[in-house]
Image (cartoon, rainbow, N blue to C red; front, side, top):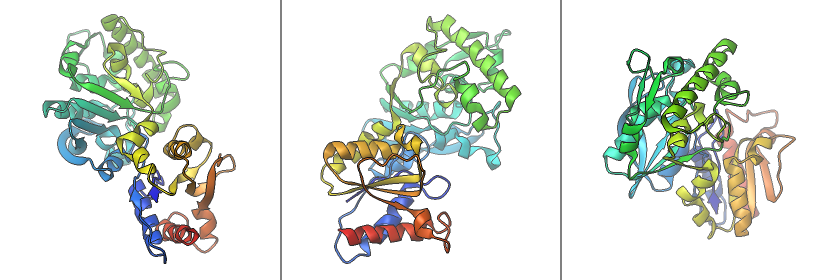
Length: 365
């Protein structure tokens, strides 16, 4: 049996969900061989999923979302290094959880990428979900060597507020560092950089920005895009995925220095989940809330599609199944909310409830 759930957001990590389900499964009367493949979509949990699938962890010195020095893990296997933006400078890394939409930066991700490259890794994967910033990728570009200057010839602060100060951009040093490096960026967001459906207008409020800050950020991204185009000849304003993670991809799209892949689908292969599925009799997947967004490309949907292609039955487990949940092809489903009834709480009692779900699945076998 293959256990391949995503995290239950705000409750348990994907690995913890796997562990509790396995405990319930192994408590049954029939022997069950269980393979754990906790899933993610490129956002938080991506590193843990990779480590559970056989990657090793290397701790490097980076910078948090407010450029505060800190350490973070990168995953390594063979010549591949994995960087998770959320692990380095995502929302969860903000001091005291206090959002700083104008000050937050992707600079630390660039430092993690540089650390991997300087250690000889030439296949670089970056998962960019969970961003705390809207800096147009200026932070990551600066950490990789790009020269981003203001009118006085001084280096611009690589954050959302600094976008308004950009007067010139030189990506030459960044491209020199990336020479010979295969860079893959995993994301399921296809928003453009600017405009009503761009990085600031759609996502900055989730990062703590108010209406006036959103307007400033969008104008800053427009200015940034103008100078990026002047430096590269490429207009990234309306490029698909340029607005992912607050514009993280803009410098790489402009310089054609990265490949973009769907996060959930890519994680199936990076973690060996698709291969493990081929020998499994049954696949279990799930997440905290199974709703219409699940069908829009999240990790459980990727698992379900892969299992269907492999001819494997799928069981869905969730904290709650919304009325708009698409359960096509699901053999059985288990809701922690339904199982909890009126006597227990589906969040605080999630571990116990997941063990019960595991036991029920084992009883079915």
